[in-house]
Image 1 (spheres, protein in one colour):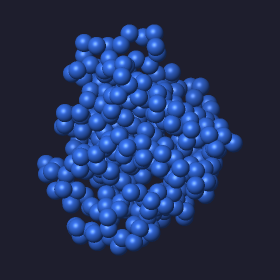
Image 2 (spheres, helix red, strand yellow):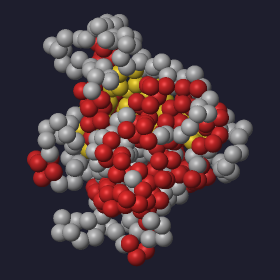
Image 3 (tube, protein in one colour):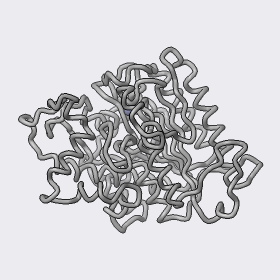
Amino acid sequence: MILYDPALIMDFQEYGIMLPIAPDRGKRILESLGKNYVPSARGDTMPYPGPVFSITDALVHSGSNNMLTTREDLERIHCKEFIASLYGGSSQKNRLKTAMFTTYELIDSHGCPNRYEPQRAKKPLSELFQTILVQVSGTWLACCLALAEGPGFCYYLGGGMHHARFDSGSGFCLVNDIAIAAVKILNEKPLRLIWIIDLDVHKGDGTAELISFARQREELLIPAISHEKPVQDGTAKEKPCILTLSIHMARGWPLDTENLRVSAKDRAPNISSDIDIGIESGEEKEYTLRLAQGIRELERLSAALYLNKQNNVKPDLVMVVDGADTYEHDELPSSNLLNLTLEQCLERDNYVYRYLMDRSIPSAWIQSGGYGSRAWEPPAYFLQGVR
Ligand SMILES: [Zn+2]
């Protein structure tokens, strides 16, 4: 099934932010599937990839009639001070503006506007925050839908803000919908293991930081990354775990290497995912093979986590951050160190999809990065083939 809602459309240029994100890419994907989406039109009869839900429909269908993502959900994973600056209303207006400037890199190192043209803005930046909150809710709802249908599959045409850090936005990501949704769902449902498989061309560094910090707060189980490290057994039954895998271009993130040098070792972008796979330019043909090796490593970590040497510990849910900025026709300059063809993008997505379906593992796919007029193509062709 697909989760899409016109309320989620973010046209950054309406806020004066000149990012090359096509606001209609979700609509283009649906059109390519022959779905003329009408809000609240339930019972779409197309068998694959299933019905299209709006946020309202999804709340009903998933049995999550309570509410959307709350401030408490954000504070569970982000620094409370940072979240207060976003919610602060008129008294915190400048702090919200500063957070937006940092997130979307609107001021360059000389203090001059960068990709920011406030004179073209039709809406205030504070309104953008409200839309982002709906985006965050969508990621959580995609997880609810995937779980509600047994080993379900839900593709969410939104979200993917994987660079957002503990106390700040980063790389066009204000808050981290992926980590927020994963931790929220662990609080609501009796799940013990979630995998986050991040396929965006940029490293999921914000997610890695947030999951690491949650482990330090002893809210999540720590996996035994090294063979020598003793496996924790006493808490394995009580504490849930989130394992992270990120496959990305080996260089080019963060944008300037100075940033890497001055950043603390235990902060993004330096902090590691449980499994990081860097693909160099020219290694595109090896992409899916390396990804498959990484997934086998996730299996090994999962088995060690629960002292199960049979290697058959399945995650209860997998969140796939399905970045289309790996595509060779992506228009963002910072994504051009890795260029998958359309066939290679499809091979990647189909491999992950088949892996999950063959094992009856529920999965929530989050659209994530993809810039320019052809960003809709990889997810559209993938969804066309979903069976
Ligand atoms: Zn990206």
